[in-house]
Image 1 (cartoon, one colour):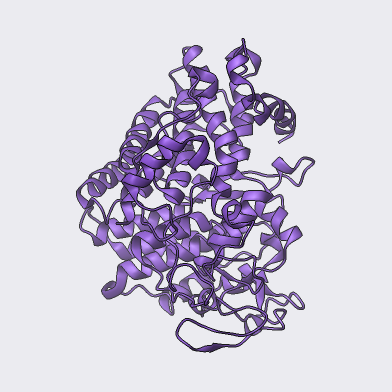
Image 2 (cartoon, rainbow, N blue to C red):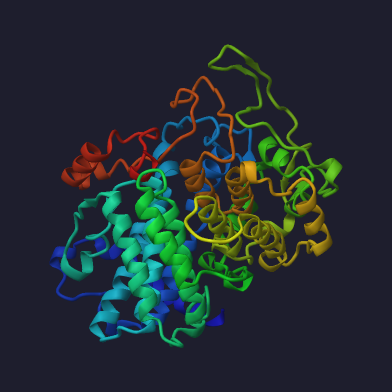
Length: 504
């Protein structure tokens, strides 16, 4: 990680957004490969993708964590489970992932790929860059739908300052192709080493992640194009996905000295202790040994199961009458409810992008759908086991869940029931993606699981329904007007209830 600190200071200079000003008059290309080694750029780009306090506060926590009912809160600025914007803050909440990623992660990964092309590198380094490029764009398109993709991040490369919005269907087909081709470029090793804060340049792990991402994105298509979903899911599984928790894709962090080194969620929890475990989350954790590992009581830090109570979603400090005319009482004392445990709120824990547990649940789904041979229960049990065991690995300050506790859960409240197998797999997927609230929301929109009861706050703008996408930034309507208008005409109104292509 020491190498990363040097990388960051260089990266801040190389990728400063100030270079966007007066581009037309510049005589030199600041993104030329001879300015900095590509590995240094990769580290900076990965850390930017993990994100800082700004986007993790506004998008991941204030919006996604409460709308997907991992968390609940009472303050009005935590808008995700009340479904209303706040004047002056609405768009930065809904667009913070876009606002942060396009000037940094997108610009960075496109520059890296161009540099590798210029250097004639078509091996492992290019494969890793292409795989990570897919991940960067996948979160943006799954959040907003149609987005700048094929022409994005090319301002320094070819002068494209107003990129077109690609249709999400086209983006997905290209991302799947990119993953297949990129995995094929991976050799037995890479030169990235410490410049890669995810896998340390280990190409075996990168190949497993490429195929696991392929499986994730294939399954995203099940509602809109089941045949294509099946073809790519079978291909991904056959090519070799993650096989253990050693393959978890997560950016490693340290507690400083610069903000970019720190886990963005940890930075938020330092500034804002409003998040509470939702009543929905606590109901799903009944009899689950993760309950006392993930949470503690706000008032005194107790992690005794009997002390851990979840807060209902949609509440405020004072009462109101909801859209159905029902009186909803206020919550004056939030200290009685559970909050994320101290060990999870640290700034030196990894930021997780995809886990082996998720892969096992998706494989179970593939068996249930009849796409691959095997036993769904075996994959389900493996997913639950991995999800419980990974907590000590990701969050070292937690108490390890024993195999005996796991076995008891799988024989008791978590025992697989084939009659509702898919629902059980997706409910466990939702639990396994706690603190990866982006993915929890994306998969809920695809599957409808877990079953969530929307709140009915009278100031909501969704008529009491959970949001299906996020707005585009207001600035796009003026700075990239034609392309923005084309996207809205194709996809539908720039509204939180307009469904993206795969969610139709």
